[in-house]
Length: 232
Image (cartoon, rainbow, N blue to C red):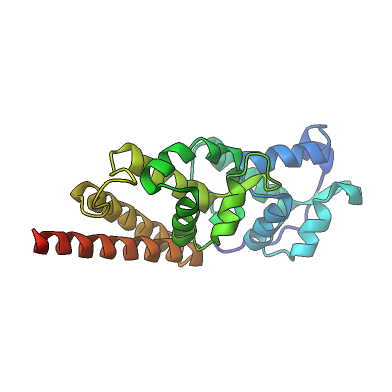
């Protein structure tokens, strides 16, 4: 996160911020545009960005409190993020606070099964690379499950694995599964990208966990190739 903005003492009428729209509807639109996992996640992000206490932000942006005005620094923070999102810029919001509808992951399962063979193997692989428990990963893939939003780190991991499968990585039944140069090169590329993301994040634990998991997979893959070559 960047350095918190200087506090603002101004108060902005809610109707000026929302353009006359209901605050609850406007906030939901903002949450979706910023790809924030929940309203509480949005409040945490604003708190970290502005230096305001979480309770202060939460109370201000909870429609049931009936607030008529919003603190200027909250308005400025949200408007700045909306401008950046509209222009395609990267947002200074931790990935763990952001996500996408879990249903966006469902169409990736056929490709992931081709790569890993079973759903449990998929859950364990994604969990290993993101630091999230496989049981939690499974809930993101449930068609009618209670979890509606998947963390952005999970979405990115699933899409990268899907791309790996579509690039021609060996099918789950191939033998030996780790003895192909194409998969080794793909794992090396993913590990390099994960390392860059971890460094850009300033040391995010989830990014570190994902990088280290990919690095372990890459080392195991190289070791398997060496064993195959030694036995040839």
